[in-house]
Amino acid sequence: MAEEKERKGDGKHKYSIIVPTYNERLNIALIVYLIFKHLRTSGLVIGEARFCNLGIDSSCGWLIRDESFCLDVDFEIIVVDDGSPDGTQEIVKQLQHLYGEDRILLRARAKKLGLGTAYIHGLKHATGDFVVIMDADLSHHPKYLPSFIKKQLETNASIVTGTRYVKGGGVHGWNLMRKLTSRGANVLAQTLLWPGVSDLTGSFRLYKKSVLEDVISSCVSKGYVFQMEMLVRATRKGYHIEEVPITFVDRVFGTSKLGGSEIVEYLKGLVYLLLTT
Image: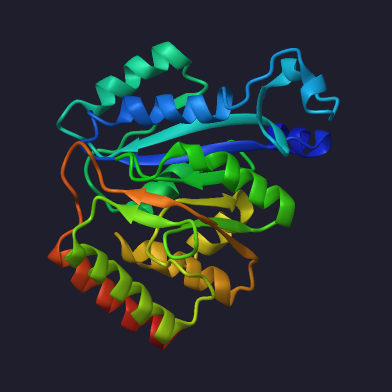
């Protein structure tokens, strides 16, 4: 708590990146590498703050810069693993030795308990004043993280969410049936719930920590419906939500955890939100 107050006093932010995992041994090392690449070395400038023209002392953190944006990033990655039998936790422990236990936090659970509770569990251990949630299967490319951070700083948004359904966004690697299913699910939700965002079922988002704590406390759904409920509840509470176009890439390694039961739960969740929000 004292650490958070000190950060707010000097105007700096810390980003806690929560990554739930289950059988992601083949993906977790690569996603961690890419997070570090895009937050630590995207336009990395050490001792050369003059390139940013902002007078930032680069010794205090990592600088990411594009043609119009420079930011001093402090971040941690919180891996919430649900008892993966494939050795995911062993890989994470090796990553801790490589990157440091202050940067890579393993917060394991004994078994699969649902995506929503995984975020709640990770949130308990987050020390940042902003929280990013993203998948471990490389569907969410970390190259978009600077855009999320930039959008939030420019707009002071409470939530920045990635969207596949605006200009610049898209999907790669899905067959026609899955594209139609996803698109249909979003159109149905838009028609019934009027959430004010274009992509309700995506799960690549940046939240102000206080906002995430507030919204998540009012959610009752588990699994994939959880993502939809989070944005609907946030909209109803009047929080400012911005969108960033992303390209969603189907997983390369491992198998998808989306099945018929998740689709049924989605429809049940849609009806529940229609009646309760």
